[in-house]
Amino acid sequence: MRLAIDAMGGDHAPEEIIKGSLEALKYFQDIEIVLIGKEEVLRGLQGREKRLKLVYASEVIENDEAPVTAVRKKKDSSMIVGLELLKKDEVDAFLSAGNTGALMAGALLTLGRIKGIDRPALAPILPTLNGATVLLDAGSNTNCDAQNLVQFAVMGHVYAEKMFGIERPRVGLFNIGAEEEKGNEVVKKAFEELKKSKLNFIGNVEGRDIPYGVCEVVVCDGFVGNAILKSMEGIASVISQLLKEELTRNIFTKLGALLIMGGLKRITKKMDYTEYGGAPLLGIKKPVIKAHGNSKAKAIFNAIKQAKNFVDNDVLNHIKEEIESMGDELSV
Image (cartoon, rainbow, N blue to C red):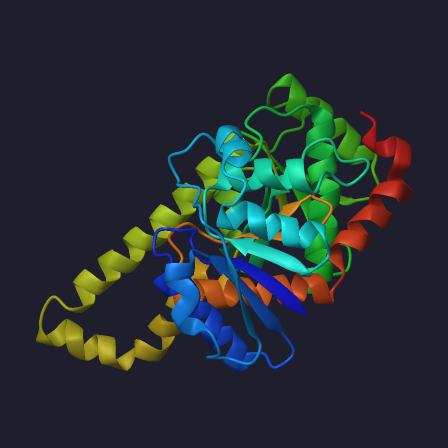
């Protein structure tokens, strides 16, 4: 399997991207990695690893650039070069921690959408009390109609089923209340269509329900989804910081911390977003994975692991088959 990685994308590029990629090559013996970036950055890696290939790109799309403009102007950027390699089937998946909007725009323009999907969705995995939950959309589409939400639900259902190994994963519709009549007209219409579908739809879920893992898939528009994602990341970070402060307050709390250190490490690992890799752009014709912009080597390693599993489990073809089988159900 050949995985292309944008060495220049993200807050800690290129050093952490390269480090995570090299770690993945040591761990996974059945992959090749194609690192894409500026020649002066990558040149020193030439010949370092047998399964590492370097592709030079002279430009970088920065985080503060307008996505569509950057994609159209910077044809030799590490991101666009990677997407072109994927389009030509020279690699099996592409991973970037760079500008999210540019990655989505570039993927749409270069690769296109799966037939039957109006809008692709960013689908990160959220840690929960019962394991993990797929959230979509997490920022790609700030305004959605009922049809978009139903399509997100179908893609999330397939992704959770194939990646988590869960038969008929539970699908919830994010809302301001559990009652059927709650929400705006778009959400109400999506509720009715999801209730009629063959999906394992459990109804509306509220923000407080998500951390408890009441369902394996949560569907919402990108504005709401991004707020949920960032809020949960922030809360997890605050809790971790508060625990650290309290457990190092004095000699007695430090002794107590030693006794529960094993449990604390397990909790921290479970709530750490870097353990869950990146978020696939579901609905794009080929595998594209968005790693967190703040990713360090550990997060890049896990994003590569996720990309590998995504390809191994043939998730995109399963999504295509599900979309075709549901047919009229998706025409809300």
